Every structure is written in C-alpha cells, then in structure tokens.
Image 1 (cartoon, rainbow, N blue to C red):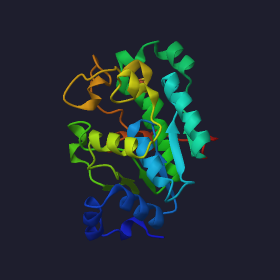
Image 2: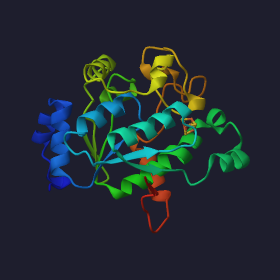
Image 3: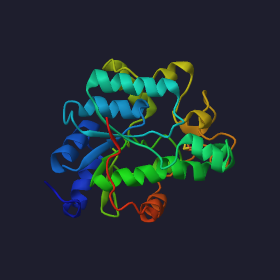
Length: 250
Ligand code: SF4
C-alpha cells in the first residue's frame, strides 16, 4: 500500500490524462483507507457503477442533511439494496427540528453558509477522519469554481481523487445510458444538478449546471463548502469529539 507522501508529481501528471476507470483502479489498489463520497446524483452513480468492478465493498459516505428530496432518499435505499452498496451515513450534530427551533425555519435561505456548515461541512470533516483518500464526482464543467480542479489533490494529509474531472455532463449521460445505469428520478422532472430540497431548483438557470443551486441567495450557483479546503480545516479543527466514529453503518 502506498503512502500519500510517496505519490510523485510524474504519477499525478499521468493520472491527469487517464480514464476514470484507470484512476479508480489506481486509487483502490494503492490505498486501503479509502471512501467514495456520494450524493447519489448522476456523477456519484457513474462512479459507483465503475467501482463495482474494482472494489465493490468500498465505503460509500453519504451525508444525510435531513433536507434531501424524498425521491433521493428512496433512490439511495433502492441502490443500496440492489447493488449491495456499503453506505455509511453521517448526520449533522443537530436534527432539522432542533435547527429550525433554535436557528429559524429558513436558515437555508437566510444564511445558507451556516446551514451547509452545520449539515454538510462538519459531518463531512468528521467522516473524513476515518480515511486517507476520498473519491468524489467533481467535474470541471460544473461551475466556474470547479474549472481549476485536478484529478489528484492533496491537502492536510488527505488525498482527494476526482476521476471525472475531465468529463462533461454529456459524457456522464452517455455513460449512464450506454450502461443502463438507474439514475435518480429527479432528473426526469427537469433537475440538472441535485442538492437539498429547499436549495435546488429544476430547470436550467445559467451557463453552468449548478446555477439552480441556492438560487436567490448569496450562495447562488456556489459550493456547499465540503470542497473548499479552508471550510474543512475550520470545521475539522473545531470538532472536539474525542472518539470520532462511523455513525450509521447501514
Ligand atoms: S444545501 Fe441548503 S438545506 Fe442543504 S445544508 Fe446547504 S443550505 Fe442547508
């Protein structure tokens, strides 16, 4: 098994020009403490389909914000059962009810950064303490912010692998149709990028597919924070639980 510090810049350069399957094969063969972060949108399920032939028992980390669409929750349960996925669910420290009682019923509109911090960034930082490497479905063509992502990114002794970085939305849909992969039914209702129910609009709202996320707020078309290194460090450092552990080994 390799150590993150041993990965050479030459290898990283080779991976930049490798296929998603080659990248996944490399990551899964070189690292044991590895997970795949899945929101169960089209990009996640593409990776889940690819990794089935490589490491079918990989930990699939799912952040249960409590605000997911019912269709997404039902889809996750179906995929978990049909594909035998090893889904590990991480939840925020406070329930939706507690958040709405103490911080207001519409924190996601008033202060979406804070809501995402509580319901996504902190749980993800907690989840990632269990791993050396995480695989994500990020693509460069999703937003302006993601244009600069690399296939392999290392920060704070954690390696992020983005096998789909160079793929477009068309590549994803071609792959899913070609391989008859069951996708989240919300796409057939006009959604182009999926997130939490209160913060996701159907339809195409701008040049990038994430334009319908947090529409009408300061965060419009932006990032929840789990892919922004400074947010992860902040929440990772703030967390004081002395016994971090997997919360729900489903
Ligand atoms: S996407 Fe919206 S509801 Fe979900 S955690 Fe972020 S602000 Fe809250």
